[in-house]
Length: 269
Image (cartoon, rainbow, N blue to C red):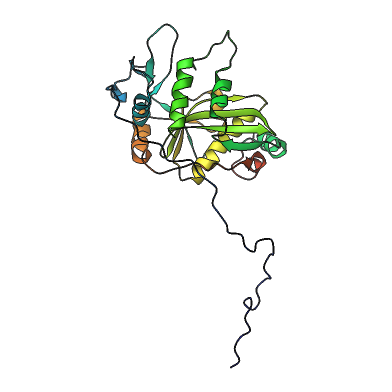
């Protein structure tokens, strides 16, 4: 038997010279959240919330307070003229990661938009844009709240999704991530459909990372069209407790938004 001449296996395709010397690498991911001290406040049981979902009022917006609150399924929602209220609504608005709706018109828009999506590139700018609303309408995103979520972001607990038209920020959202659950706080658009693109980007990356659920807090008509549904608080808290300590980290690489318009579930509207 003659020794086989060294080279590629018989029948194999020739190597691509562009790939020689290159190693496939996974995209960078968000760093794990930094530990925070125990909260100085004893937050009430979410099950004691009143009919409006109010669990209690007062406390502060320090990182330990916020992390403890989100771990319990509670979030702050400032209202003018009253001490800081904390909410845990029943039912809770959620989007299942495999249940998002993308209408045909939106798919067409995404395929041709030319936008790029990033994670955590411009957190403060996204929060500022979310807070920049008509003065007659007002905003719950106070200066104290903006600073509080900025601190959470620097500690790795809060994240933003940015949608760019070249170097211009045209949409985005931000929120708090507890393991497999991401709680969206607010989103904005500077161009039509850019906030929807940010939501779809978040769903795609959270699913890819092994996440479980997107918490949207309350179902609005806009979110309902994107697939949001109501979940009993007890069921939401049960799922949160199971996945809140998982190591789920969003990929940070820039990606074309056009891919979000391909395939997937497409309702008829």
